[in-house]
Every structure is written in structure tokens, then in C-alpha cells.
Image (tube, rainbow, N blue to C red):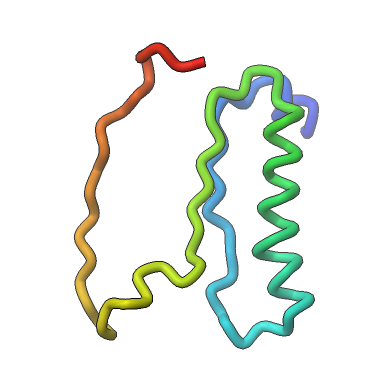
Length: 84
């Protein structure tokens, strides 16, 4: 299965994380740091990788009041433009 992934995958979206700030530090590191690191290592093995997109939840919008609505801005795609 890993060979198929490294042979065929072009885009990786990493959205896995624990947002429980009460996790024991070793568990939080395994999930949030080492998990992301393993995804990066996998991306380096992928022969046809175009993009690795990592979504971080670390202290996102901490300056907003509780229950605040944060609008989502969809950015234009760069696929097809001159990127190396």
C-alpha cells in the first residue's frame, strides 16, 4: 500500500491533529508534531508530489472572542501557473 501511495499520490492534505490542550505532552507530541513530521517524510518519498498542504490548529484566532464567527476566504488556485 505504501508503494502505491508513493508511486501515485500527487497532493497530500494533512488536517490531522489533536486540539485537546489537556493531552499528556508525549501524546500531544506524537499526534501533532511527529504525525506531521511523518507526513512530511511520506511526501518526500512520493515520486509525483505536487503539493503538501498542512492545516495547523495551533492557537488559531486566539485573539477573537468566544463563539466569534470567522469568515472563510477562498483563495484563487495557482494550479496551472508557472510553479516549480
